[in-house]
Image (cartoon, rainbow, N blue to C red):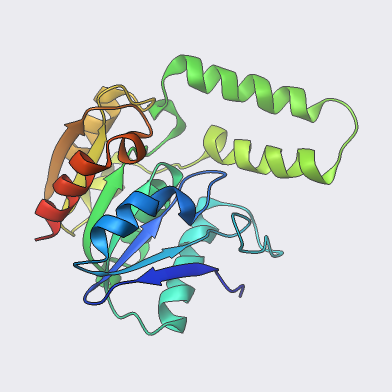
Length: 223
């Protein structure tokens, strides 16, 4: 088991923030600032991201979900609200399927339940970058980049039946100009029984570029 680096601010019910691919908890600076007045905000760095070591286990979203479970056990967090952005949202989805008893409310920000949820041009670009990195001499840096790209190209693989089985209150939120297809986001909200769908101004980084609207929607949902 690896130790996830994390920051913690505020008091009250735990609210765990899960960042996206190739990022760290620093992307949530405006969310931590907005939420710490109401909740105990906990923002870990995923395995191999930010200040958390890569470790020896598989570099997969399922493993990251298992890491989150271990993290909650280690820190004696019985239950938490969980907000995941992009791949963090995909980790949150997998975690909800495995451990619904550990979640109060779920916020899925620009998540996708399979790679087809990405807009075609972005998906195509990822695959080209992945293939180009495969060419030539291998290096630690190239292998790391390929691991990150592989997550977006091959994962997650969640069925529609699994989405229907999620039984926690869920907010599905995305930018109006997101790189996740609008129909895909709508499908997630349609399939998860107790869910609310919101689109806000902005692109995939809507939470960062439009934090006031994003934070307002999240707080309204949590309260």
